[in-house]
Length: 262
Length: 370
Image 1 (cartoon, helix red, strand yellow):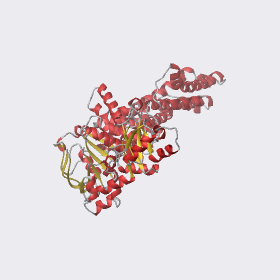
Image 2 (cartoon, rainbow over the protein chains, first blue to last red):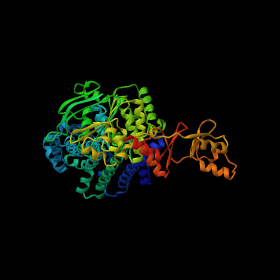
Image 3 (spheres, rainbow over the protein chains, first blue to last red):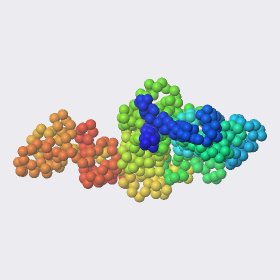
Image 4 (cartoon, rainbow over the protein chains, first blue to last red):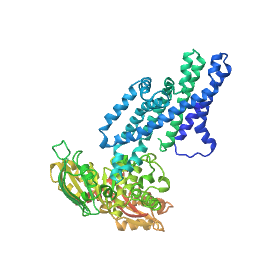
């Protein structure tokens, strides 16, 4: 049912059509998210109401679940936003011919960020920033840089040089060429990078629990420590559903932005 | 007018200049074709005129102004630029594509829309249908028409065209070439046109600059290039069948024979005697408003008379298979005649029969022009 709805909506999204009614808007944007949220909530409610284990009952409260969810989302949103704010302009700058020699350095440094395991980054920077939110944000930010930067570069490079030369030949200002031609044509690839980065971050944010930054990771780790499958599963299922939700929403933003489709 | 004065372009790391000491002039309102094998420097030469490439030495003047003294962006807005179909921006509608330069020049919106529609009409695309479509919705020929319209948007006096019709199939290419020549007839731009197709050069050019390894080999009219090639290289480029190539230079007008035109209301007997008197084997038939109805051979009238058929001249007249107009080239007429398997073509313009062409009249015209 939801699968049918998804293929139908993505097909329609490839055309520039404004929403004709609230019903259509709801079908396109809200149906799948509501199903995902409903599945997660249903799972949690089922476990909370059906458990007989008092340890599980004591730990798995609605308040704790909501708090963990909000923390998780906050970690992902803040780190992703900062990563976009840094990588997008950086990618644009090093795609300009005169800054080409910067490319090796910038991509090299961000590559290192990506190579070092996330848990190690958390440990390393705990020394500088201490425990908690800031360190987690820094690690997640570092992790999201590369996909966005790489795709921004690749996207701009993928624009047919003939098109850019035509724009120059007609006397368009270089700045206008960037904003009117290069970025719109690179948008699909750039959005792909942002999607990858955000989805990775949803997973990596589950590790933030080790430095006390909260999130669904709290449930997973507690579940492991106490050998309580119910707690572990609640955390894991919520993380997975959140990743799918993020990907779904971003793919819709992407389709909405790229109106000329194919 | 475009003047090149000892223009040379050397790329770093290469001993042989891409363009070597090139000097020539292109008079206002003419089409100059740069032709030659790939790597001969024709595209480099063209791109130096709008400063996409900066010459190593030498001077280029456009309408009297040395282009090295002008801001390149300003310069380019006054020079139309057409390249193969990839040049259209895929994420913009046809309207937005054509409006690029007027938008850069900050024309008011209303004026831009008016201009877009005027241009689409000029290149034969209905604005109501095509203005708000995307390039991917158009055929190759239509995209190329849009490319031409876009280059003319701000009415620049000079246009550069880099193999503009190269990606089209032969039939579409010939059609769009004819249309373009008709438009040029009206707008009289100074045009630099790059191609590697010598037939296209002969057909489109007022002058042809033949280039080889960065140098100018011959700069002359198409007729001169055909009859008097400067050296062996030009001779080979033009090919052995120079007489056939000449067909590209000659228009229907020059080979046309008069045709007897009969009123559809006269009797078959009158028609037959009129044809006898004129010594015509075939005649055109026009209706009472003077509109062309078709052609009728004398044999058919004779047969109808001999068998006393109850019929009229308009019923006997047939729509001819090959109908051309005055500025079609003989090359195109001949290929249409061969395709249709007909030995005659009829010239019809504005619903009036102007004359006819036969294989004989074409052969005679070509040999007289040699």
